[in-house]
Image (cartoon, rainbow over all chains, first blue to last red; front, side):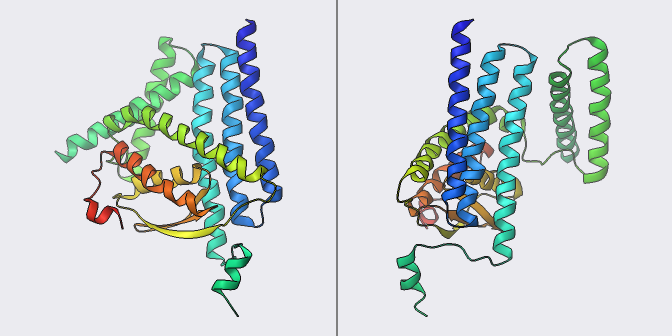
Length: 109
Length: 172
C-alpha cells in the first residue's frame, strides 16, 4: 500500500521535526526550568507522532493497541518526570532565570 | 453500600487488567483468557491487601468512558500549544519571559489534582513544579501561557464530573 506508507512517512517526519525542535530548545533555553519545557513536551509529541506513523504503517492489528498503550505510558511518564525534575529543583532553591529588565526592576540590590 | 462500591471497584480493576492482558498476549484463545483472569484476580487481591482498596473511588465507569474524549481534547491542546512553543524556540530572539505562578484549584481530592497537574505539564509552556494542597506552582514560559490553565481545569472537572464553583470564586 503506497498511500499508507506515505502517510506513515509524513507522521514520522513530523515526529522527527518536533524532536529536532525539542533538542534545539534544550540547547537554546537559558536555565533548568525553561529547558524542562522543550524536553518534556516537544519530545513527547515527537515520539507520539513517530508511534502514530508506525501505527499507520502497521495497519489494523493487535500491535496497534500495544502502540496506543505505549503512547499513553509515554505521556504519563514524561509528565511525571518533568514534574519530578522541576520539583526537586524548586526544593533545592535553584533560582530560575528571569528576563533582565525585570530582575533589575524587582530586585534592585 | 460501601462494600458494594468496593466490589464494583475491584471488578473494574479486574476488567481493566484483563483488557491489558488480552492486548499484550494478542490473542483471544481460551487458555490465554483463563490465565489472564487468574493473573488479574491475583493482582486485584494483592492490590487490595497492600493498598486497602482496588481503585481510587473517583475512578468510575463514567470516568473511563469520558477518558478517550478527554484524551483527544488534551492531545488537541498539546498540539496547539506545541506549535506555539516551537515558534518560540525557533524565534531568533527567543522571546521567553518565564515566571512561577501560584494557581489555586477547586478540584477536590488527590486524583483530579494529579491529573490536572500532569495535564498542565504536558501542555507546553507550563510545568507544574509543586503541588501542595490545592495550590499549584506552575512555571510558565511566557505570561500568556498562564491563561490556558482555567480551560484545562474545566476539562479535568468535566472528566471527573466535578461541578465548578460559582463565578464569584471562579474569577479569583
